[in-house]
Image 1: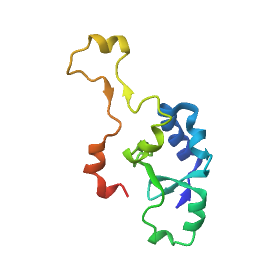
Image 2: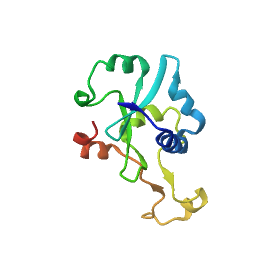
Image 3: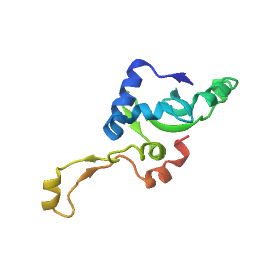
Length: 133
């Protein structure tokens, strides 16, 4: 488990800012302690610094998961959020999806038209439960 590089941090924060805006700072500086993001096997984990200090005693090859998985980096180094991050993003979110059409267009659109692009859903969690570690 290692800290994110500058490029990885930028990709993560750009993705998070689409959903929670400037509230990213509230994820890191919380009243119950300082939290951080760490990378392990292309997955980004969100955990308290207190837990991180305790985890230094565990060898990397024995470490499976630590904290909450926020998402993963694809082979092309794009960041993709996982549904496991939703509990932490929901209190600060403007909405968990990307609008495909404006509000005015949504009122006149065909019932089968795409209005919001899929970001994540509970079914995804169930379908990929064994790979979300």
